[in-house]
Structures are given as structure tokens and as C-alpha cells.
Length: 254
Image (cartoon, rainbow, N blue to C red; front, side, top):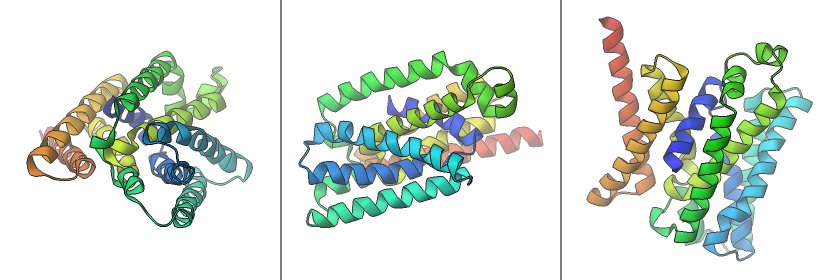
């Protein structure tokens, strides 16, 4: 479910040149998780506690870029650095980095509870339904904001929705691949699909397929080789990207 979410959203983010927003929001998630652990939230509720903070930060990125008249990457950098600094400070106040915090930083798929799987299922279905219902508007804004605005699309609302969906996805993905590797799961399947696909819809479907394959294969390989699951998933995803790049080059040479 998380692979499908990250891969579908990743296509929009890559084409909008917002790839690093996943990394920025992941750093905010680190601060939010540290805050939840400081107040003694149980593991199953940590993700839920982090969602409001990450959504607020996503909205903050948009407003900083809009009001301060700066580029989106600078706004992402401001919020990202504040999030990671907050997390480090709260972890220090709590007596240092503990095992729970490290599981969120680098991923620990074995720590995912049944309740978290159910929460992920509900939120995943919600996010994918929103993407399906707003597909045409998302497509229009992705390729030409000005044309979309003149044709009646509410660009600001679509942009806000996109970063909110990304924020939810980042929170859901943190235990699978870890906060430090979330952006890779958003970027690699999407860029792999864009190497091969000939249409936008095909790119999304191919990205989802590659994301699911990389996550499933990464979990299986990490079990066989006794490797960290999150890192193994990203390595498999990179190998798929390298294969798709080579396939594109071979196709172009012919």
C-alpha cells in the first residue's frame, strides 16, 4: 500500500520539481515523532500524533514560498532544517536517542502493529481515491499551472492538496523505509517509470508496479541476507532505475 502511494505521488512531485518535499517533510516527521515519544505516546499512536504537525508544516512550505516570494526548494529547506533541529533538541531533552527513535529514522518493518496496518489501509485508500477523483486537475497543474488557472482549475487548492497527500504518505512510510530514506521511495520508482512510459497515465501505473516490486523484493532480500529492510528496498529500487535507464538508452540507440 505504501509503495503504491509513494510511487503514484512521486510522478507528480518529480514532474513538478518538488521531489525534495518528501525529504523536507520527513525531517519534520522526525521532530513530530520525537515530540510524541517525549510525551509518552504508544507506538501505534505515534504516527497519528505526527500527522497534524506534518500537515501544518506542508501548509507552511506553501505559505512561506508564497508570502516570502522565495523558491519552493528554499521554503522546503527552511521547514526541513527546523524540523530536524526540533527533533534533535527534543531527543536530547528526553535523555538521548532511544531505540524507538532509531526505528523511525532508519525503518523497522517488524515493529509495525496490526492497528498501524489498518490505519495505513484506511489512509492509503483515501489518498488513492483523492488522486483518482482529482486526476485531471492534477494533470493540468503538473504540466502548465498558468494554462490550468485560465481554464478554471483552482491551482492553489490543487497544490495544497498535493502537499497534504505527500505529508500523509511520508508519515505512513516512515516505519517501512525510515525517515532518512522516504524521499528515495518517492523519487526512484517515478523516475524509473518516466524513463520508459510513453504517456502520463502509463507512467503512474508503471511507477506503482515498480514501487511494489521494489518493496516486496527488498523485504524478501533483506530476510534472506539479514540486511536492513529499508535500505535494501532502496537498493532494489535503484537497481530498477538503472535497468530502466539502460533500457531507454538501448531503445534510443535502435
